[in-house]
Image 1 (tube, rainbow, N blue to C red):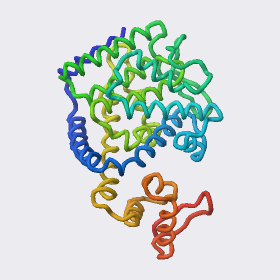
Image 2 (cartoon, rainbow, N blue to C red):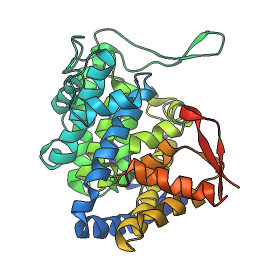
Image 3 (spheres, rainbow, N blue to C red):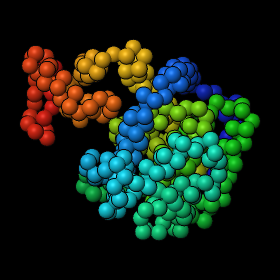
Image 4 (spheres, rainbow, N blue to C red):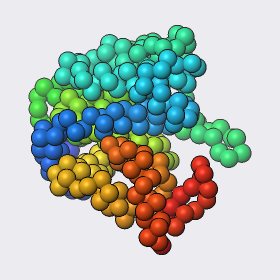
Length: 348
């Protein structure tokens, strides 16, 4: 029977590469604190940009998506949702806002997890928000022929409520004792949550919001400026591969937590490095917009679209980006591939 006791980390032999990643994360976090404290007003567009991309990416992972235009209208511009997809996008974005602004006042309790799940579905009429699963569920994979295979059996429904309570209590106990590195504890909590799989739907999205909440509460607020959810989405099948391998033998208290920790920390470190690169040029050195666009183009391997430049430099207007791209085309530094909506650019 699965039990929740994170004190095993007191004596655990943590792989050296994980400690190295943690050390690097703390180093970059110090730089990020300096940047954000000195330049808080200049970060507003990045925070909105991150909310949009986090919401869209987290829902895309679950096959829930619409056009970029409609997503922006609902999440950023405040248009009322007109269908179920938009309702779920709006719900996620509102919870993301809550965590960003109120994380210090949000306790890690099973009742709070239920409330977060409830609010994801607040704008829908599905009636499943804030309720634990009523029947046992399974996690399956489907191959290209449509064949289904059970890859994991989460905790039975009858044990879910008790497990959620015990998991939160175990986490809070270790945080209170302050004997364990939080960056080890957070991925373990998330892996346990996903292995319990407490809801009929919305487990993945809830886990990603919980990740943001736990990181924010421990002072790792990088997910407010760089989308952690987008990093997961970009990692493709790796996320599911790591999750499946790490949760093997979870019921017997033999989960490979370090595999999931390693994956989670790699994405977190990647987020900090990206932040450092973006803000060193835009905020600290005060590079011109033209210089920043060209600097981004220089880092691209292969082709890129105007949309990708906009995504990476959200504080620069579309017209400015178009002007610089045209300039580089005229100078024969870039070549154009395709036409209209499929247009991409490549360095010569």
